[in-house]
Image 1 (cartoon, one colour):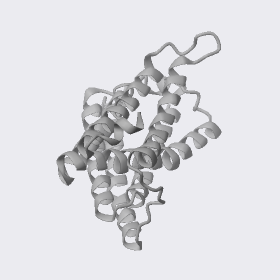
Image 2 (cartoon, helix red, strand yellow):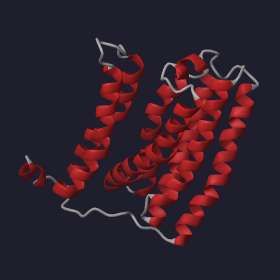
Image 3 (tube, helix red, strand yellow):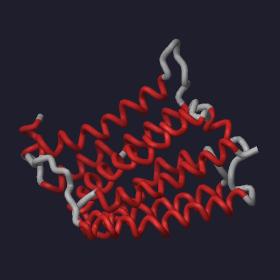
Length: 238
């Protein structure tokens, strides 16, 4: 099989890589939300979600090593990249928190959102703190690694820098819209989707500028931390 892959052009390899990775997050989140949660002692939807998360982490590494014959890297960046990531964190966090402030004053947030969150078993302070840390630090890193490095680089081969930034941001947003749909109104879905695409574009631009995932990750951590704070407010509000 690897011999067959080696006969493909760069563009063909890029298309195949995208076909293998792009459906995974959407299938995973749909499974976690809508596949029957319990079959005996097995939570089928969560198992599918977890397997596809592992797939998204492992595939890019295997692709780099065995298809592209590349070498692993820590994606080093410069002090300027770190600083720019920190600076971008400020307006993005302000926009996210401001959006929540507007949303909670209207009918943007689904009254059943609290129950939906509690169904994941993260309503206690201890469990939520673990969940929030994992999402803000770990999941954001995985998303930068997948979407800004792997997906963006493949789209870049096919369509060039700016179309690749925009396309990777759009595909990054798609599975998040399913989550938003379960927590709010159509307005929240639209606002959230615009915010996610904007964030994806900024993080893609930072990756292309510094050839590193770390500037975007720093900014992404700030965004996810703000989102986790909002989620906790939804859980604890009266």
